[in-house]
Length: 306
Image (cartoon, helix red, strand yellow):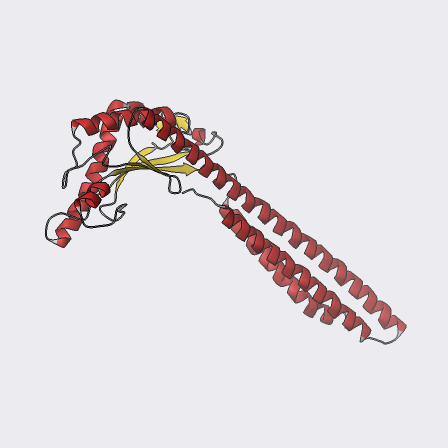
């Protein structure tokens, strides 16, 4: 859900600059057309005055429409910038959250890997080892998972939108970026029974069972995690299984298989934005319609001033 770079901001800036340039260019073309039109009407004083008054009215009308377009373009740009800033804030908060968790894990000599880009805390085989075809946790893994749960409880408390059984409206009051979900993700290697179809079916179940085993062990030691809610009032901690579809180690050997049999904790942030993307799209359509109207004014002016 959230990573943000400068590239989308730069692309949106270029888009709006291009739109403004097009609008200004059309305005100049329109003015030139009106000047040519006026010069070609060298007739009596009465007609000249009528044409002058007509052109003046059209220029005023065009100037107002151009000002409206410019105001709407600036409004769209400001709102998109607000969305980007909210996403960047959420990404930064997630980086700090992961760094905090990692420091606590290191202090307890729990080996994990941090993937900041994707918001993943990876419990490798050095921390949680699964035997091939099995989803149960041995005593060492259970102890490790219990300690991870206690660390999570301490960090989640500072990043959840709310706590306890409340309505989504009450959780909406939280400001800044909050935790949307922590997915406990189970993974398998590519091995299994000889039949490919049965192996695929079994590995999907196995990966989910591994995630569920980890989830239960975490909540057994830190049941308060059930109380933390996202902005919609939903529980934050959840599970998912990915079979062998997301390997982190290439190769067809025991070392690669052991690395791929793992648990990932994926942190998804919910950026607090007061801007509705549908509103931005609607406003952008309005700007496009105004630009089309500006393009049609030159034709209307010829008819109006005859």
